[in-house]
Length: 356
Image 1 (tube, one colour):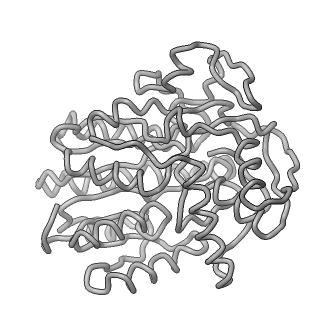
Image 2: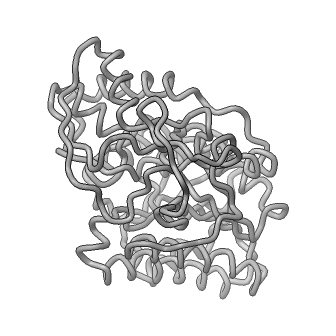
Image 3: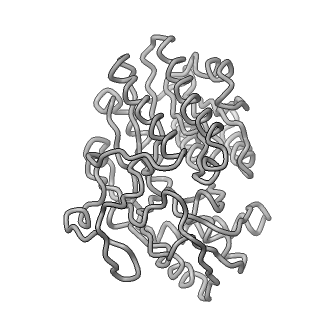
């Protein structure tokens, strides 16, 4: 992973994780091609930030995943592909399942086909989601310290492993799950060096949290502005949160070790040590800000998991990952970054959130 040659292609490279990954790779001396439709509010600032930091390394193709000609052109000389671009919201998939399908399944298949036809065995690492495991409704839960936790002691100790059966819920779960399986099958059927990272909740700088995605940043944005937070469900639902620098390390490691991990999917999150309920996060934000945060509740949303924590043991072994940033420190760092953005008038807010 060194030297100036063909670019690394990052679809969704102006987004939250994509821009952090692009910054890492450009800092290591790679040329990076950012392929992004720039549809999400604020991501154009991420692209401008990347170009300012790495003017000789960052280039951009502003196009949609559904533009197969543009996608094929972007991929034709790539030495590696990180496929992060997607339709990312459960709510949007419920409102427009066809668009969700076209972006997440057809877009993924288009880039896989482009690489297959090229015949150069170009590595591809795909950003999947914990939603491929469904709502985990069969997992018996108990309440402990204002958070749901599994009754089963093994699951409680380690989290959800990759052996968990796939169970797609909502159009978003179906589209991301199908794309996940296509990526794995192209390794099996066509010997394309691909790997899948099934992400839990990633958070950190450059995240534009909204009601549908990026709930950690969203909570902080609302709280910093003194605005109320609406939580769907009772707030005791639990996620394992992972600081973005740790996620970027996993993506880079997957590329570095692609021949060893090709055809494999890994659960990527903060693990049991970084499992937190929505209520616990609000309590920590109140501690950071030294004031109360106003919270209201809405109904549970389709497909929401009351508990999801990644079993990270396989990823840590296969990818050589170190201990992740403690969530309390990471949230404090994100709060500092958001304060800087707020001072410059550079972040958006929205009124409600589901755990993604």
